[in-house]
Amino acid sequence: MSQQQDDFADFMRRRIAASDAFVEGNPDPLGAVSTDRPPATIFGPQGDCIEGPDAVNAANRAGAAHFAPGGTNRFDTMHSASSGDLAYWVGVQRSSVRMQGKDAPVPMDLRVTEIYRREEGGWKLVHRHADRMMSTHT
Image (cartoon, rainbow, N blue to C red; front, side):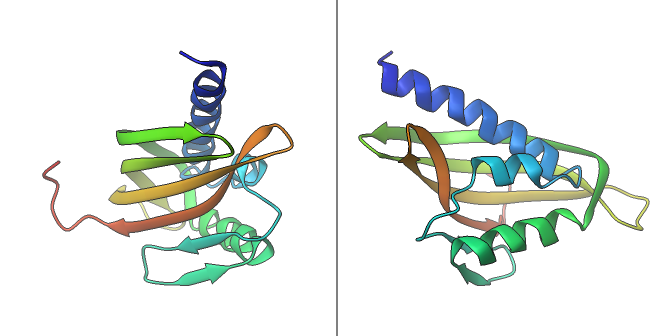
């Protein structure tokens, strides 16, 4: 494995840990792996389009606030790669989340495409497109 691929693999472990924390209601690790420079975008599961790093990071903080501890999360990778200063990940994020004020866990399987950019020697999340799966066949 090349140094670049190894660096990206390390980043993806941090990215998954950030997602694990997010579904438990903690947005801070996601903020740490997300860009604070334009361009930055989210196409969210509700069909929203959010643009700009401040708006994206605010939306992530607001989104995490809906979740309570006790959730589970897994990334099923279909494919990913890095080349130069850009990288991507495509797959299914499978979560069981606990919503604030609710007793029962809620399954949440999302089709996800993410784009990352190398900034000052480290990878940062710059775009996320996630929508609910209509079928669980993968």
